[in-house]
Image (cartoon, rainbow, N blue to C red; front, side, top):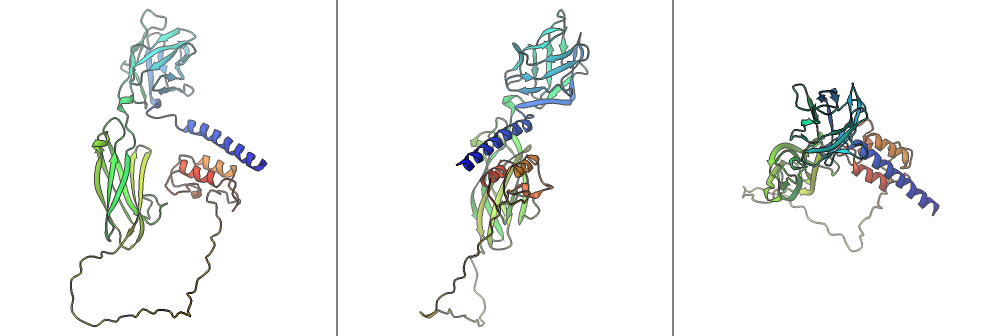
Amino acid sequence: METKIKKILVLTTILALLSLFFVHFTLASDSNGTIDPSHEYAWGDNLGWINFACSNCNVHITDTGLTGYAWSRQYGWINLSPSGGGVTNNCLGQLNGYAWSSALGWLNFSGTSIDFNGKFTGQLGSASSKSGKINFDCSNCNVQTDWRQCSLRSSPPQVRITSISDNSIPSISANIIMTNEGSVGTEYQYEWCVVTSEDNACGGGDDVFYAQAAKFIDPGINKSYVTSLEATVPNEGTYWFKLVAHYGDLRSIASQVFIATANQGGGGGGGGGTGTITPTITPTPTEKPKVEPPVEEPITNVADFNKDGVVDSTDFSILLYFWNKKAPFSNPAVDINKDGVVDFVDFSILLYQWGKHS
């Protein structure tokens, strides 16, 4: 009982640490953006240049508002999310609310916005205020973010392999569907391959077949891209047909196992000639088929990255070090499912093997 409680406490701690780890690595995106450090300055009539991407500014733009600080060399920090105030965002890029400067007081962001390219536009404040006007549109002003208006976002497509329509070698065909689940039309890069192992990733260099293409897909299930993808397989056997669609760093993957067979159809006549028929030998009732004992496979823990015989917190620390990184890895074992990236799949396998000894 004590061992079980200890295991639960360890796993709970790991999940808590992992949640913090995910927050650290998912800050910059369409829905939680940062400021481009090469496009960071606005101009204030009384404040001079205002930096939104200084080393300690830590500005973030979300669907509801701004957090962090802007910096004026003349007047110091400007708090974008102070207690009792804060700059708001209505998800369409229209900003409002108040930032705070200890030297200048409240700064009203009404009249400013973020356009469809992520560029801050407009002016805030007034010439009669202590801070004067602050301008995002002057000739040398340019503050940009990777946050995007909610109505302009794309997302990875949904991909499905509905059937293997032809499994006769050498030409294999698969029927597929790709659906844009975002809100705007998007051109997606996609690839398909045939591999000999479920763990093989497309483009890994050991594909039986590999191809790639691009397709613009309008949003909505009724605008789905339905097609047949062709591949070439030289020999009979068991294979996996895989489809991978990309959107930025995100991917959608579909996979289907199939058995490639020789074409059994057709076959015209032929000349004469003699052939040899091999008779089928039926064992007599006294003969018994020889049964070989099964070979027991050694127990191996693929999540035992440091090879110390047990899956524990040391292996978890190694997984965290490589989290969200892509191949090649200095320790290839961390990519447990061999899909080219260390992610939730590898973490779930590690949890399944937690505490097990080789």
